[in-house]
Amino acid sequence: MHAAPAVEIRGLRIRRGGITILKDVEIVLAPGSFLGVVGPNGGGKTTLVRAMVGLEKADEGLVRVLGMPPGQSREIGYLPQVPTFDPRFPALVRDVVEMGLPKGSGGAHRKEQVARVLADLGLTPLARKPAGILSGGERQRLFLARALVREPRLLILDEPTLGVDVQGLDTFLHLLESLRIERKLTIVMVSHDFSVVSTHATEVVCLAQRIHFCGAPADLNKEQFAEVFGVHNLFLEHHH
Amino acid sequence: MLHDWLALGFLRRALIAGILTAISCGLLSPYIVLRRMAFAGHGLSHAAFGGAAVALLLGVQVSLGGAVFALVLALVLAVGTRRGILSEDSAIGILVAASMAIGVICLSLRKRYTQDIFSFLFGNILAVLPADLIVSGAVALATVGCLVIFGRPLASATFHEELAKVDGLPVDAIRALLFVLVAMNVVAAMKIVGAILVSALLVVPGAIALLIGRRLASVQAASLVAGVAAVLVGMEVSYLLDLPSGAVIALVLFVGYGASRSVTFLFARARRLRDGGTDLRTAAGPASSGTRNGS
Image 1 (tube, rainbow over the protein chains, first blue to last red):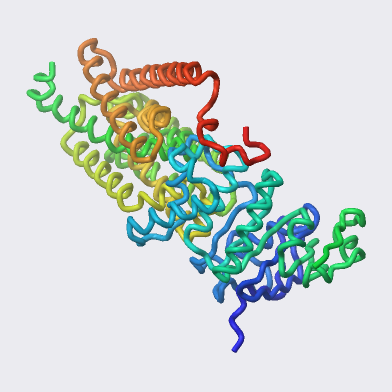
Image 2: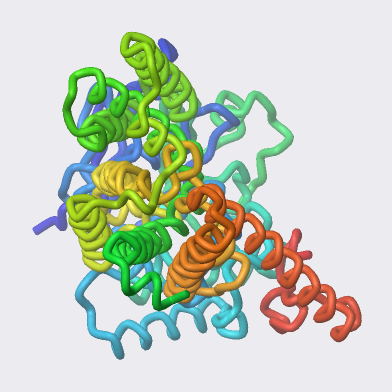
């Protein structure tokens, strides 16, 4: 028996202010997959993931996430493109992570979960610091911790590697890989950087208003890449 | 002097109403500041003025007219701006101007200002009636109740509205609830500081507390203390010097904010000097330095 898809999108069309952002988008993602969404600026990558989490409404088509309409499942972790908040907000790093937990879990269990995810992301030394003093990269990790603390089945990340240095990027991608394998976590990650997703994603979607390629990263050729990005020289050959 | 406040009935009512309003506004104030609703609070108080003037013309309870206008504006703001029909500040600007215009026209039709409308504009805490006390108590109870019951979702939605929505929180309802609470507090605070100065009680305690507290609970506690202290000091000073209570309370809050700002600035400077120019982030260890834009 086949498991229900983690993400199922059929004939998705989204228009905003008379402009078509996305059209004819079809994606079926099996549980445990790692989907990389790449494409040029303005290609609709962020709109696509926002539609998955219920922040954008589809004008046409079907979107189902973990078998439910967008915005219904409570087993999704989401990292927005620009993880900003008012730095005056009076909360410690651990308080912000705890906000990601669903209502009702016990006090001791909550603390344990928060401590574990803080340790996973190297945030333990910052746990008692005010969240408002964190740097851009630290905020990125804080928001990722908030997304992971509820142990989601689906993790949706919008440009999570912005502002992260090379060492941090490597650690981050290995963390995602281990989460995917250990917890059977499904990951959808938007990135403007094809080299980031090509090495870790099991599937890749090239998006520029519509899907130009959908498949294993190794199957994407230079011509398809150029069709989406309009350039050849950014394409990286990858070896398995 | 305290004896006077407790011995005389009208002074006792003023004291109780002032404390109740300060508690309610003080608890709400950090949310107003963090969600940048200060202009909304200002707008709602001016809308209430329009309602009060209409009520005066119709010969009904002035505070009832103010409450109706403030609540209607709160709901229009909550629903209208959610649907993206108009931005919040534009909506407030347009509706408040209309409400004030209605108020001015209604007053001009009466041909004379009355004591009632003057109290509504600038506050008259000594004119607090038993019925006003009931209103203040009910508003304080409703505010405290809502903040206790919905504290967690309210904090989450204030921290990041989109993430709260993805988590399944009813962020539009939370926003509407806050607008309604602000409108109710505006009406309750009218007798204390008046429509013109009500935003002082709604904004300044939270602004002071955010300079001091590091967590939401401590900020709310500090805001409550700042609000109550300002009302008590302001009432005492206004009583001693025979000055309008609302204006004195607003000035006490202003002085309190200035003093808090100065003290926190001096503390931060002393800490920087003590740490040899390093900031808090440096003390966080190696995990804080692994980012491209880390410092």
